[in-house]
Length: 123
Image: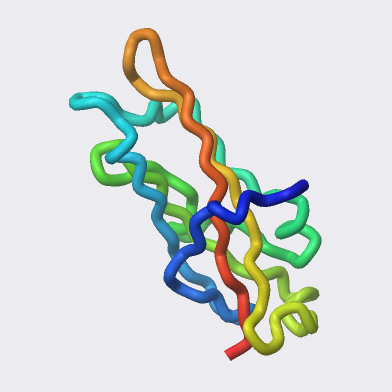
């Protein structure tokens, strides 16, 4: 799957041995009083990222969840231990894509989909 060169890259770089939290704000795309429907949103690791072991963590307080009055999505990422030594993470590393699809609380509801990238590099 081709990833748009306009897909934002998170400012924080993930070392393959780290477990870090990330947040995507949707507030600037929502109308006044509108929020993300807490029952209708999904965070996906795209195939290119899954092939290098990118994982959305869960459990122990690391479940993906809505925040900021249901206008943002917060989640934890890690690299599967079997992939941590992959040469793709050497030097400048590589950007790995995720996609968030949300439905809003408005009536009728709006659907938003955005692709984001996280840079994974050995530090």
